[in-house]
View 1 (cartoon, rainbow, N blue to C red):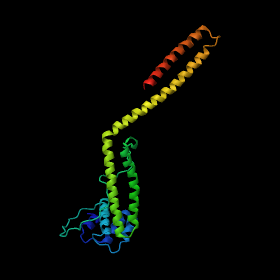
View 2 (cartoon, helix red, strand yellow):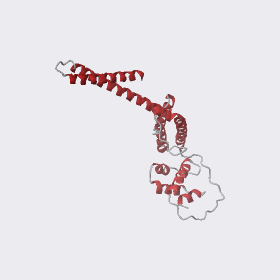
View 3 (tube, rainbow, N blue to C red):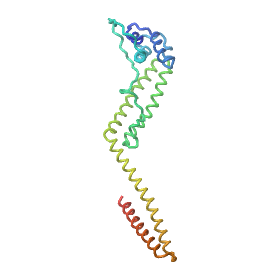
View 4 (tube, one colour):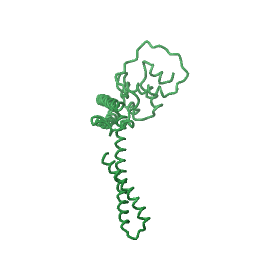
Length: 239
């Protein structure tokens, strides 16, 4: 077993030894600074409990050496009262790329943007936990983080449930509406083009110097454009 596993299984685990394992995996980051400021940390205390959870992460990252026989300990490890905040399944990004917020009902859009605000509040609470040296203040910040995480997860469950049932239909409807608007725009442009062509040919037909062949050709074009104009107008009115 690796050193992290050994430390976790040791009921008389030493705080400094746990810090050394943390430092080996994560380096001297903000959490290491948080642990180093602890004054005589004891098992069951905030610093000790958080360090235990961090070493559990180290245990998964340290390459396991040749297995050694495990010895059963007669004493039970102390229960952990405070655990780090973990999403239920992986990491949830508040700007969910699978959900188009503009297609959500108004009440779910409010939840979506509330989650944006929650992310800011979580960042503030995490910052307070790292900066304060008072265990009571840190514990309150931790509880607030837990409540915010639960609210965020609840909001996402409501959004995901609606999107799973209605997202495809909403997307198709939006696509149809976008396509309809595009068709309307194209019709308007074509109507304007044909209208100008009709006006131009009518003006040209007033030229008394045109021979019969050209007059016949232009009248044929005029008839075709007038028919197209009428068809487009009817399609637009029916739309």
